Length: 187
Figure 1: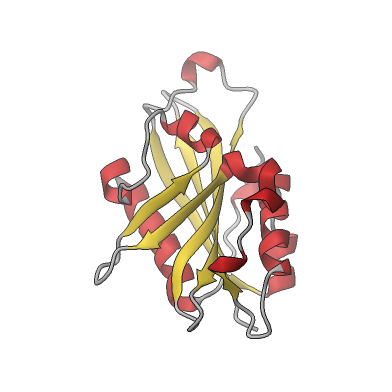
Figure 2: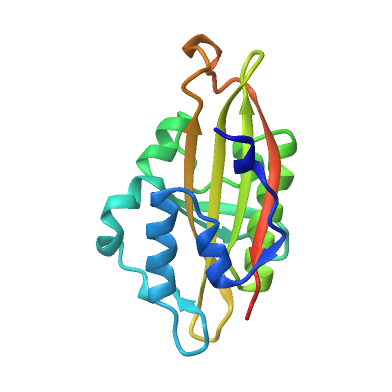
């Protein structure tokens, strides 16, 4: 992990958004989503074909807004994510899965992408007993109904672990701290 990886990008163009992606899994998912955009610049959720993204499925999640709230419910969660969280979270809201400052960060990430209809990336750091152990990157990509309403977010979640931190300090019992939120402009 380099300190440069923790830069904050408030708002960038589609090409800039793609250039700022540093993980091949997120790049593949973004390119897939971008290739499915319709003439209106939106991806309809019925265009999602899991078979086309088989190699990144373990890192994929889908969340849906809970009606009349700023909360989000996990609809689908890939096996890699399930193994990191160590429990089944489909059907649960962010608040039912997480606690602390990361809850607001995730709701802001999901809410921004849903409200603007544009991709967003949230970066957070997992801090172990005394040292930062991982940088988490979550990217969300809006999917719409036929009338253009964003009703689901296709997401990717990757963890980049610091090889210099001893394994005994790498624990999921640690606190996750938000670092940045990046939103793609609707150009």
